[in-house]
Amino acid sequence: MKRVVVLTGAGISAESGLKTFRDSDGLWEGYNIEDVATPEAWQVNPALVQEFYNMRRRDVLNAKPNIAHSALVELEQHYHVTIITQNIDDLHERAGSANVLHLHGVITRSQSSINPNLTYPVNGSEIKMGETCELGSQLRAHVVWFGEPVPLIEKAAQICTEADIFIVVGTSLAVYPAAGLVNYVPANAVKYIVDPNIPAIHNGRIINIPTKASEGVPKLVAELVNEA
Ligand code: APR
Image (cartoon, rainbow, N blue to C red; front, side, top):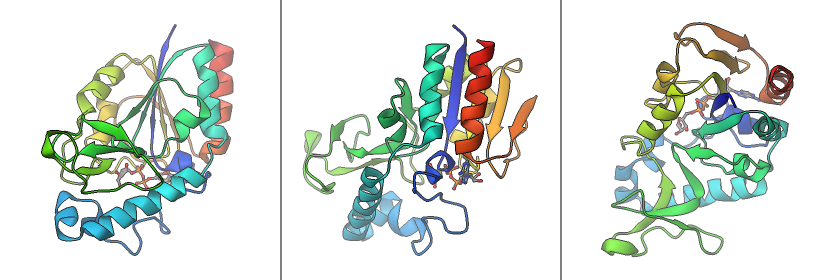
């Protein structure tokens, strides 16, 4: 089976009602990133950071996967598919995708403040940051904050080196190291970007599909299924 690697960003969940970051009505509006998504912010204002992630968690739990998420599941009948997502929502899993790597964490789990690999399901309706967990550390949202290393980046890069087909959906490719994953994809892999605003990337031949995910992804999946 050929290997398909899909790199997704906030744009794939936009039509599920979850706001993107860098579009004009983005989620960060009204919040400075430094105030809610850095280790320093949690030190300075833990209540604000906890409320911010619980708000995002409620939005995610209320959202449903859209037809772009579902179309990617169909690919699994014909290809070995891995989804590398920058999203902290769980819509790929809820759509039914089997292999999902959450590069920036996932809002349905919490983690130890000193070891991001120690993660836990969120019990109850709210993330309770600051409670003591293993190693005497504190529970926090399982999210990679700005300025923190991305623990899964090497695994993701390795997966990209094995891609026969690479699909980018709904990411501005503005944030590293995620944006650099494109550079690990073999030169002879077939590459597609589905995004109404195609980001500039420089890695060989790329087929641009300048549409919303709900339109472009199901069409692309239908073509790939035909070719399989
Ligand atoms: N379908 C497809 N793409 C869309 C849609 C849609 N309906 N609506 C918007 N987009 C595109 C935008 O054109 C843009 O290129 O989605 C992209 C969203 O980009 P960003 O808001 O920058 O989101 P993302 O790339 O996922 O951000 C990366 O930055 O803030 C951090 O950690 C956070 O994981 C996030 C990372």
